[in-house]
Image (cartoon, rainbow, N blue to C red):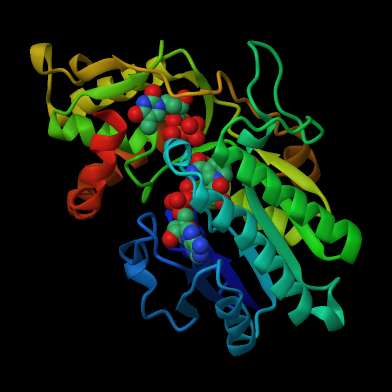
Length: 348
Ligand code: NAD
Ligand code: TYD
């Protein structure tokens, strides 16, 4: 099978490319990525010369680049991850989110539909989305696949729109689509604009840790490799048209997870007393429209597809912290240059 993974140079995409090449030696993986600020080919250094790996520099906003890739690489199936993915950036500049997440998904669906028209029901299209499309929870309850969409940020609204497009391409054209909505991921290769890598990076550099609002917002954290296994399961076994929520059932208030990581980093970095990472915690102005709580009910994927996360939070976090401490050069390569401009704009 020739499998196109869009956004394969990003955080989850790179983990997925590596997972796929390790676990499916008969498949060829075509990584289609525009290499925005979030795309980094260093993530895929170890498979650069793998016989079953190809990289295509391409932009979803350009339908010609997509159709050329389909015909040149005879694409059999797609796992679609490419997106603008950071809520804070969507607040500063929503246009890119509309273009990539909505128009880009539309371009991809249309190209796939045309290219596979002879046998549309055979070719799988897995659309990777987020739990943020469901909006914000109160202190009770969890997101089910049947929860009504109520996106609150330009990011989540653009992902919600893309989910609706995918759903309608199933309903109208009978495309073989499946959609996943996952909770917050953490792990190697995550760009240090997201909470956990930003926190680890700031602690290594003695930079204040910005905590939005009262720090009591809740997220449900999943180790990225467990997400990749879930995507593999859904890709192979999910019924066409189905939606699967994926999550770690691992809820943390931001301030608690930050303190927990700080304590682990103190041990790793040999810090204590006045030097403790916890002393870097700084409460800052809240994110506009900040969703209070996300929590996934993952019963469907667990019972229907027998998926369950393999990493405890302790294991996943230990692996993640170790990875960032061992890859300081990776971090410094991406935190120089334009990252500094972003940081100043976001945090002052
Ligand atoms: P990321 O920002 O790390 O990577 C996105 C990738 O997409 C980058 O490699 C970038 O170069 C590429 N890209 C962006 N615009 C493109 C375009 N126009 N054409 C081609 N490529 C383009 O994102 P991520 O965190 O790895 O997320 C991947 C997917 O998973 C996204 O769809 C996101 O909505 C979803 N998701 C992420 C999380 C999370 O916690 N990170 C959780 C649930 C769902
Ligand atoms: P983030 O990693 O941006 O993911 P998302 O907003 O998609 O859930 O943020 C996770 C949580 O951490 C969220 O509640 C916002 C909060 N946060 C901070 O308090 N400070 C920060 O500097 C960042 C980036 C996030």
